[in-house]
Image (cartoon, rainbow, N blue to C red):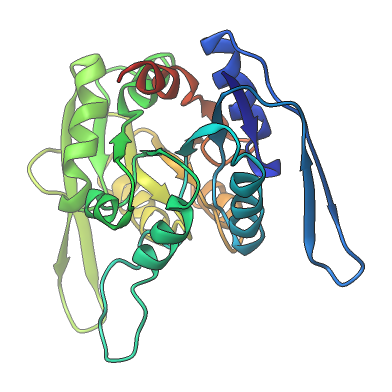
Length: 282
């Protein structure tokens, strides 16, 4: 087996190969004068593992080209992050089900797909090859454990992320809850933990994705008003669009922690061990 990766997943791909103790195949990336992408894959084995986060349209096209280049090999695909996965419903006539379209396109030329904390596991049904989702919640929790926080409250931004918060909290035996929004007036909304109190304790807000960070920014200010000593933000996928990282820090968030499914400066957690374990499991 060899691991091969796209430009946006070079670090994670190399880490997965290191854990699996297999070589990394080289890839040369370039563009034609008209902007079209071009690549040349190096030597492949009979079995290939592609590690490729789809973070934008260029990454999507690059992955499709790479899968085609690997076609003589038996190829499995690891999608650490899958763009378009959040558009998994059709809300009006004529609207595409984008998650389905991308899943079908990425099924071509591979025998299996592995996703990491995909936003909705129902998306797996759209792949035309076997697909499974794995979680790095335990790894996020393990990193939180290194922060030396006394009696932290692990907090999901909404009840939809409560299960993920519970998995993170289980790593350290911490309490967990989710934010509850209460409309006080037409213009005023209060956000606070649903069942537990944040006063005099550090809070770690956890979610699968941090995109704009708007909810966390608002929540951080209110949690400090409610007596929280520190507020941290942790996620699997650090999308961090529109200056989100700077907004979070300026709002008083002590630190922003993400994994390397999207390679960022704040990628303190690696999905490599979990991916390697999933690859080894039939």
